[in-house]
Image 1 (cartoon, helix red, strand yellow):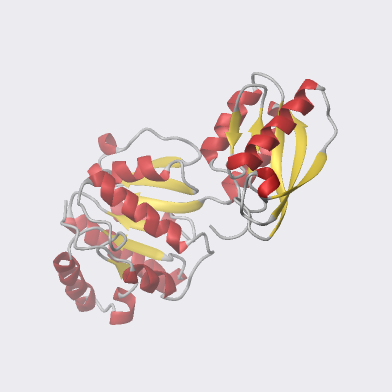
Image 2: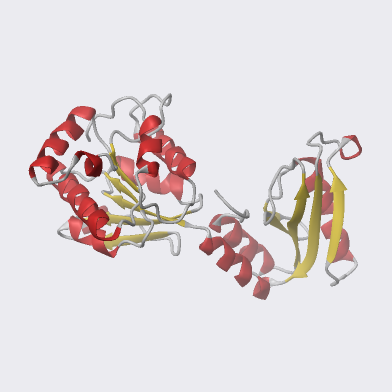
Length: 299
């Protein structure tokens, strides 16, 4: 993702759980010169016997953990900043220089980390909680996405996992499109083609009005999308508008139609789009289309 690095929500929750058992040290990448395992903003929490998050692994992380635990053993509450050169003396060959900050914290100090993690989450709306939809939730949940699961069948919705997985029962399902946050990545994969079409139509109508949905992905074969395009054009949508829809979805080179395979492919495609703010042009859809996989059969 673009900009400063932050841990995932899973890292935040693990850090919170560790700090309820006792104090820890927040180790943060404060500055980087040259090549380094992680960028500025990456962090980990170190307690006496566990860690959450990561500053890049390897010998640098091992040394940082030892330094943090020495602070804990000395009951040292002073914040510190330490410079490490990533060369032979550290057993790493990145060649850069990393400045790490060390700060003793408790469970009450986790909130700024939580807010920073939330601020980096990219909204994704999954319409349809069939096999692929559920597999996508499992893949996206630990990644930097805030996922909303939408289905006309209340019994199909998964258990929510606030704040990174929300659920919404909508019938008709396309009514939920207008309430999506600006910048949401839309994935359409319901159990009915008519519902898929209605959602795509609603998303394109919203683009006409507000231009704030950077990615609209439709699961299915190219023949399915060709039929949808004919129907959309009959309703007055032009070729440029139809080009905003990516179908099939997934990255080129990732073969297989198992739900878990499709989910990983789509997740990688979303990560490649980055966390850029609202895209009003066709750049996101065009870029995604270049990375399409082979045909996906309809569910």
